Image (tube, rainbow, N blue to C red; front, side, top):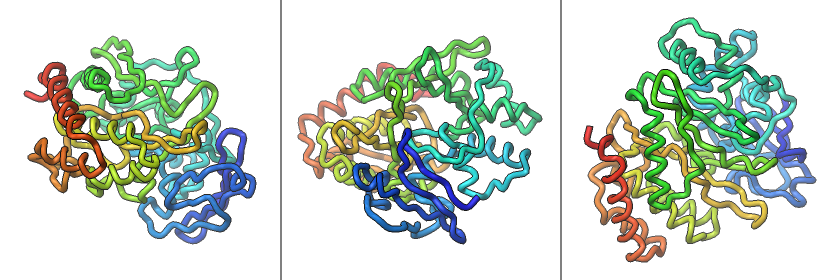
Amino acid sequence: MEKLNVYIGDRIVGYLAKYKDKYLFEYDQSWIKDGYSISPFSLPLRKGVFVPKDNTFNGMFGVFADSLPDSWGNLLLDRFLSKEGIDKKDGLVRLSVIGSNGMGALEYRPNYLLKETLDFDLDKYQEEANKILNKEEANIDYLFKNGYSSGGARPKVLVNICNEEWLIKFESRFDFPNFGIAEYEYALACKEIGINMPEVKLFKSNTNKGYFGVKRFDRAKDAKVHMITAAALLELDFRSPCLDYNELFKLTKIVTKDNKEDLKELFLRMCFNVYAHNLDDHAKNFSYIYDNSNKKYRLSPAYDMTYSNTYYQEHTTTVNKKGDNILDSDLVSIGSKFDLSLEFMVQSIKKVKEVVNTRLSKYLNN
């Protein structure tokens, strides 16, 4: 495949083309007239062909790499393409398979595979996912067509329930038993603190205490919402430590045009991640959504706010250049640089500690 058209809804945004080991992009003239930059730093809204500077995302701009799945979805996508005899290394092919089914608003045409509606059972999906994770023979078609386009490391599916779009997660072999209820309780703790969380639900299971589900914030009524991760904005490899919260605050200040509510929101998330042991707070776990009505980017609702470890037992995004042994003073030091009041920060830290200790101590004391 040599070229793809990039759309948001019925409007063409631009064109992707492969040249040697790079994927070039150019905006359509009609989008330049009254559209917006889909990646403010790398793809400013202007004429010309944009060429990625490096191979951080296999020669692709981060905003398009955001449309592709992560480890679990990639595993399914690789298996499917191999079965079909298709070049699984071609980024345009992979985007074409994602088509209109990816996270966010970007769509890719021609679409190689139209999403099918299959009979779906949560426990059956977990059973088939376990087979894959245990390197046993599994129903690849069933797994792929229900969960190939989602990001993240854990098995998950994107489903429509009563005309609402939901993302439902499943357990992996790296999780402790009944991890779904843990993430659900973490989400409720976030809501009590005042963190901007989407609607969440614990979906019934006959084999465990339930599957964690979150209503998708990249969908609004009948429209899709454009989103971009911090990793994509900065063209950073999120799989290794590459950010400090000082830099994340600076990014948020710039991208949201110094929106104070977003900076306060980010402070709450930083505190929660520190005190609730969410060490996997990497650059792809922070996103920004485009607010069409106000013509600007905002910090997206929070996601992946749950108990997590890293193999080196430190935060992926450092706090004041520290991956562990983080103090209240480190949090305040960062917030002070971005004009957050001392009163707000002290009260926020107190609130986070109280809620975490009340709601989540059983996970933190194990």
